[in-house]
Amino acid sequence: MTNEKLGALWERQLAEKLYRDGFWTHVFKGNRNGQPSDIIAVKNGHAYLIDAKVCSVKGFPLSRVESNQYTAMTLWRQRGNHEPMFAILTPGGHAWMVSLGCIETFLDRGRKYMSILDIQHTGVDYDKWRLQCE
Image (tube, rainbow, N blue to C red; front, side):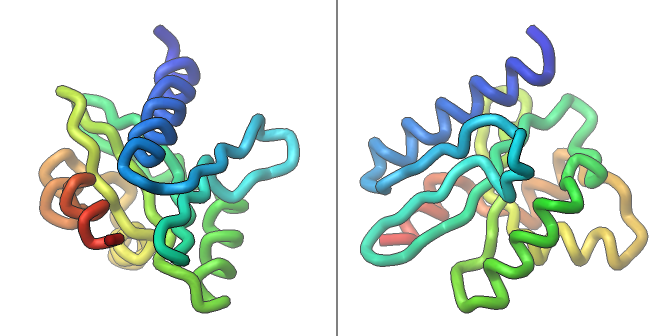
């Protein structure tokens, strides 16, 4: 399966998972309009901007955060919304929520890559994150 197909599958699975966990979800379709993320999820009056990413065995290249995503997510945050998140699916099927701020910290330090351990240490387990959204 290609990376694009894996990413689309994870995006659909994540939207379904969020819905089952009580969120209203909207999935942006296609990349024609330079969408800022994959999903908007809303629960209890709080909106979350989420981009779904699939991580390889080695880790997550930060170059996969596109400039239009960074710009839109930064504006989302500046407007007083919750921190934009990347839902990173690691090998073995575990989902970690990594904030835009965390990605920015890595980039500011000259890092170009997040290892699996980096994701586990700086991200929040999906189930723990969703409970924080209650």
